[in-house]
Every structure is written in structure tokens, then in C-alpha cells.
Length: 449
Image 1 (tube, rainbow, N blue to C red):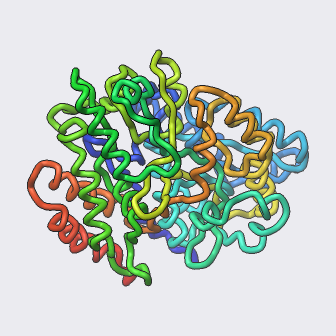
Image 2 (cartoon, one colour):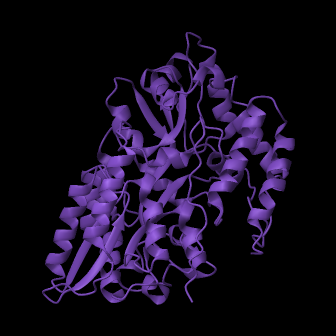
Image 3 (tube, rainbow, N blue to C red):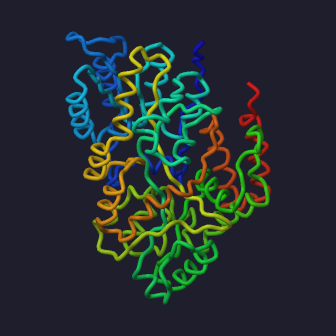
């Protein structure tokens, strides 16, 4: 029986912004947010157009209802062109596309799931995937994910990101990567070699201090002190967020304390303090594009933004401590367990996730990349500059920092981020902060419902 209990989908919003917040920003970094009234109007219109109650169109075609957040608002025309192309080669299928802005998306999706009118296919991000998988809202893709075009399309880590309790509930549909951006001019001025693939935390710290010593309002480094940055640093230092059985927090280990010290120790030494940042949400972006920041931990979605400014820059994989672990933000397409046109829905899912036509469209329009991008298309993407080292975007897929699959992800993220902020403002030590965070999150992590 389908269980309608789906836990909170509220995202962490802190003054320093988590990677979850950043990830869904416009590729130009200047997306204008829709007002609540306009968003509500669009959602009402979307529900009317894409109501998932019809299974057959007037002309006898199978109807597939699809809901997306990554297309709105910048890629609506791109998605429409893909829909048209798909229907041309699948004349028996009628795709009904529905989109919603990210801020409203999960409210709409949760309502439709609970009401029995869920779209046949819908997008999920990694943060919310576990909640929907645990609730019974997703169909087990089973053997479908291991046959046909999907068989060799994805890396093992990409598929595992959307498996739950040993079952495959989603196909990776798009991704973006966090990298180390660096200012070549500041490195040259400080007499430093540029970052390489084998850089460690110590290498980054040394370079950050040298650049900081240049003075003149220049900062050496910038990395947000947040839950998502902590989970990555923890993995880079050989630690685990959860116990082996997944029922208890394990991030307050020695590896976790070292990761917390690494993040919080930058504030006020090689990166700005909270007082200097104030309430500015794009403080880091402005610093880097104005040539006043040596290194910046940020995402590939900022390539077009930085390219608009006259600075000499490039990217490298993020430095490691004990192992490589990269932040790869993936979205997935899921098949609703309520779908009454599963075969047709699977065809649409497979097209969006494995088609090279879709991969080409994503490259051409600076949309999030397809994990199934062919070698030929990868070469095309890598050849475009800046930055010169675009290969690092795909290179990161080889060593992905696992994001814990937690049904109360948002609440846990808030707790960890807030405890890390306690360290930043001097309210507690890293050891005290992680002990407190572990105590506060333990009831949420436990699988006993």
C-alpha cells in the first residue's frame, strides 16, 4: 500500500548559503525570483493543463504527465523542443509537460502524490530523493535500469545516488560539479604554482595564506561553512556521516572534527568574517569576479557568470585530505508508483536521461549537463573556454562525495549548519559543536519510526 507520509522538503537557508541554495540559482547568477502571487498563478495554470488524470488523449495516444523544476524559468523553450522531438519519434505517446519554480515545486508534488494525481514522471534532487523513495511514491525500476540505452550510460556512483534499500528508484538526469576556482593573476603575484589534481588541504592552505598576505583587500580563500560543505570535507578526510548500519550519526569522529576545523578555521584568517559578509548573498561571487579572491569553492553553473568579467581564471578539482571526494549535484527522474502508463513513461524517462540529442541541447544552452554525455560531446564541451580545465567537471564523476540518504535531510542540515556557525562565532569548539549536533540529529537519523 502506498504511504502518503512524506517528510519536510524545506531547504536549508542560512546567511552563508548552503550548496543546495546555490545549486538552483540561474546559470548567470542573476535569476529574478518570481513573486509568490505569480508563482501561485502559474501553479494553478499548470495543474489545469497537466492534471494527471487522463491516460489517453483524444486521438488515442498514451498520455505521459511530466513535472520539472530544472526547466523553469530559463529552459522552458528547450524542454518544449525536446518534447516535440520525442513525440515525432514516438507518435503513440502524448507528453504533457508541467513546470514549477523550485521554491514551489515540492509543495505541488507532495500535494499531487498525496491526492493520487501524481505525474507519471517527475524530477527529484538528491536532498529529497530519500523521502519519496521511503514513502512508496516511486516505482522500482528494477531490470529496466540495467537494459537498453541505460545499461552503460551511467557510472556506478551516479546510479547508487538514486538507489534506496537496494532498489533503483531513479535515473540520473542532470548534474553540475563544485570545483576550486582560482585567480591566475593573484597566484602569479604571490609567486605560486597553479592548483593541480593532486593538491591537498595543506597545499590550499599554504596558497591561501600567501595570497592573503598580498593585502589590499584581497582574500585567499572562500568556502561556505555549511552542512553540505561539511559532508564533503568529511568524506575527503576519510570519515562517514552515518554509522555502518545507517542508524546513528558518526560525523563527530576525529575525522569529522578535523573537517570542521578545516572549514571553520578559514573564517577570519584567509576568508572574510561573517561581519564582513553581512547579509550579502553574493559576497563570494562579487569578490571573485572583482579579482579580490584567490580561490573560490563554487560550481560549474557559474562558468557563464565569471566569463563575463575580465579576470584570468581557471578551475581545478577540489583538494583532498585523505582521499578525493567531489561535490556532484545530481537530479533524477523518477517513475511514479501511481503511473498507469508505465511503458510509455519509461520511454520518456529513458530519452531524457540517455539521449545524446538531450545531452547536446544541455551543452548548447548551458543547462545542467547529462551524466550520460558521450565522449564526443564531452570533448565538445571541454573544448569551449573559459575555463581551460573544463575536463574537471566530468573528472569529478569518478570520485563523488556521497550525500547521506536521510528522510529528514533538511532538518538535519539546519542543525549541522547552525552548530558549525557556533564555532565560527566562537560559541563552541569544533568538538563541542559536533557532539551537540550528533545528539540533536540522532533521533532524526534513527530508522525507528
